[in-house]
Amino acid sequence: MDMGTGAGILAIFTALYSSSVNVDAVDINPQAVENAKTNVLRFGLGNIVDVYYSNLFSGVPFKKRFDTILFNQPLTSDSRFAANGSLEMSVFDPGYQTFRRFLQGAHYHLTKGGRLLVGASPNIGNPRLLSKIIRGEGYDSRIVGRNVEPSNQWDSGIEYRLLELREK
Ligand SMILES: C[S@@+](CC[C@H](N)C(=O)[O-])C[C@H]1O[C@@H](n2cnc3c(N)ncnc32)[C@H](O)[C@@H]1O
Image 1: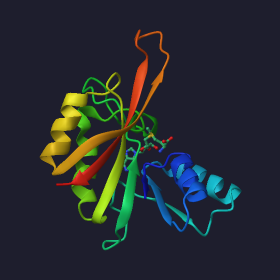
Image 2 (image 1 turned 45 degrees about the vertical axis):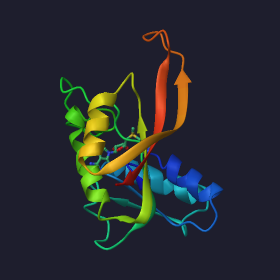
Image 3 (image 1 turned 180 degrees about the vertical axis):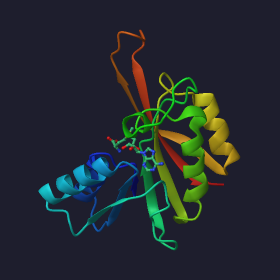
Image 4 (image 1 turned 90 degrees about the vertical axis):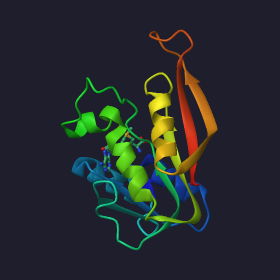
């Protein structure tokens, strides 16, 4: 499953490069949903990737479970920024409240032994708060991917991490 699919890139990539998968791709932004649907059809993946509107898991069938749930989440947790409109909601998540609800909902939609793959950044985000929330919601995490992009703002660059979370 691809939570917050945006243009659908992670869902499409997963469908193209993994064998025997079916992917549910959801987003709270109706324009993102339309965009992702168009891109999925462009790649001929209409039978493999199901794109639909959902606020976190609200639109996901009650008993549906997934081996892997991706969430390239809005990275900025700073409470000075509000996430009122669709665009802001793709970047800002004050206090990681949406991410916390995501973790709570994921317990009902992961298969036994399943995993979450979550994007994070120590520069843009708040890694201490993120770790506290992850532990508090009953998951163990480890870094499984890392990339650093050059930046004018941070001498060491902007670091992106891919975290793998499993239920304790
Ligand atoms: C950082 S963007 C990632 C987009 C895409 N997955 C990618 O990697 O390019 C975060 C996405 O999460 C979506 N989002 C934010 N809050 C959400 C919610 N409550 N339920 C579903 N999607 C949400 C946003 O609309 C946005 O498309």
